[in-house]
Length: 334
Ligand SMILES: Nc1ncnc2c1ncn2[C@@H]1O[C@H](COP(=O)(O)OP(=O)(O)O)[C@@H](O)[C@H]1O
Ligand SMILES: [Mg+2]
Image (cartoon, rainbow, N blue to C red):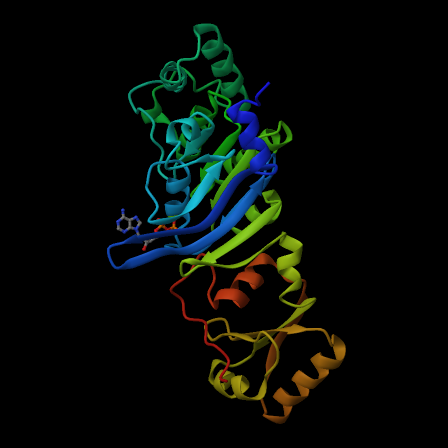
C-alpha cells in the first residue's frame, strides 16, 4: 500500500515540526529577513529571540501563511507554507502580538465562535471551551464580555481561542509582553503543559527569563540574520564562565576607568557607572582590575561576580539589550 501523503511528509521532515530554509523577506527597501534557517523538533519549544524590529513577527506571519516570503522555504510538518497553505492552516494555532478577539462577545462566546469556524462538532466545542476556560483560569469571567477583561485575561483568552482546535503546532508572538507577573506565570505554566502533551511551540520573545525557562532551543535574530542558536546553557557558555561587574564611585572618573580596564567581552554603562567583563581568572583577575583602578586613583563603589544570564549573551552578541535596543552601550575601543 502507498504511504499516505501525510506519512510521506513526516518521513521527509525527519521528526521536525518546522523547517525553515533561507527565508527572505523585504518591505520595499527594508530587508527584514536576509536568509534565515532553523528547525524545530516535534514536541519542543523554540524561542525566537531578538530586539524590536528584528523580524520575529514577520517570521511568524510567514510560517502561519499570513504573509508570503520573497525567497527560501518553510515547511510545517512537511507542508510548504506557500504551496500548501490550507494544509498548514489546519495544523497551526496562532496567537498574535495583538489579540484578535471580539470585544462584544463573552469569553465563552469567543471560544464557541472560533470552534464553529473550525467546524468542530457542537459536543467538542462545548467540552473544549470548558477545558480551556478552566486551564486559563477564566471560569469566573466566562460570561462577561471581553470589553471588561484586563490585558492579562485577554491574552489568556487569545491563547485559549488558538487552542480550541487542539492544533499540534502553536505560534506565540510575544505571549507575555505586557502581562502582569501573575498572568505571566499562568501563561508559562500553560505553555509547559501544552508541551508535555506533545505540542510543538514556536514563540517569540524579548524576555530572556522566558526563553531561559521555556525554550529547548533559542535562536537569536538581529539585523535580518541568525546570530546565534543553541540551548540557554550553550549560549551562556559563549559569554564566559562568570562575569565580573564593577561600579565606579564617581561619574567623573568613569571616562578614565574606561581607559584602564580592558578584557574579554567588556561592557560599559556610563548611566549606572558599571564595567563588566567575562572572567575566567576569578580572584586573580579581580585583583588586577582593582589595582589598575587604584593606580589611576579611581574609587570603586561595588564589586560583584555573577554567572552569565541570557541578557549578557544578548549584550555580547548584539551590543545592546533586548528591551532597550536604542540605548547605546559604549563599545570597547579597538
Ligand atoms: N507590512 C509591513 N510593511 C512595511 N514594513 C514592515 C511591515 N511589517 C513589518 N515591517 C517592518 O519590518 C521590521 C521587522 O518587523 P517585525 O517582524 O514586526 O519585528 P519584531 O516582531 O521582531 O519586532 C520592522 O522594521 C517593521 O517596521
Ligand atoms: Mg513583533
